[in-house]
Image 1 (cartoon, rainbow, N blue to C red):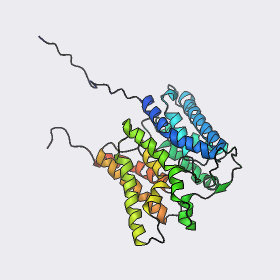
Image 2: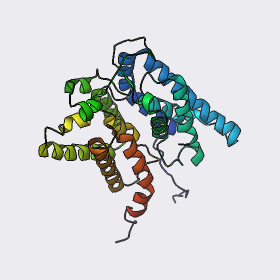
Image 3: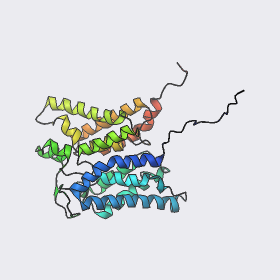
Image 4: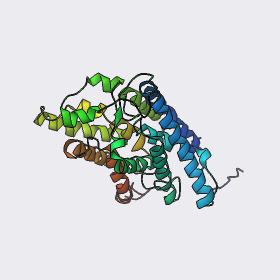
Length: 317
């Protein structure tokens, strides 16, 4: 006679862990980070080091002395927030602004909601948008991409391809945004490097295709329509896909487990909203870029999406 042991779920362990997923995202960011180091040199190294260290220190301080809970910086989430924040910043941003952005990202973007798994908004984007609103001049002064430069805060500056597209109508070669070589934030220099990271995350099943593809497809469709209507005023979709922070946002920021919908239909709607808002801001807003604002707005809509788009209950017709 066989004896069956009845126990509560889960019955199968997938082997996933917070630490492993955080490590995979860091590895996926590595190609884009190495490209940033190549083009921005010391500035990229300084900004990323300060951002990572500040985020780790801020989380440890808040948990230890404010919330009086167990310090959990070993899970890697604070370090990843710091790296993502750095990838959204200019490589010549003053060190003290980087610290402020890191504290805001961890304090207001994460810990005030209760820590990992409870935050409503992507912490790194909270820090970035706070800095953009508080220090707009510094956050829109982009260093020129110069291989192995040792300049930091005194680096030469120039407009980004999106700024050229919106205000000057004089664009650099498209290949420079695909391979690398144009100015911008540390994470928007090379489209190929970001796509390699995205393919790695898909291969490791850290993310699914639904959010990135829905974002990119929405941007491509709507910018393509506008380009067909008036090609002299609106650039072709390839420019919008490769320039700016769209790929960084679609692959690494919008796919955050905590702040994105749980269902596949919800993720498609979420991605559509991000893509549409991005296009509206880019084409008709005062900012040349709108990815950060679009993701944060759709982060706020995620609870509603999860409420009204739910899977069918098991055994219910």
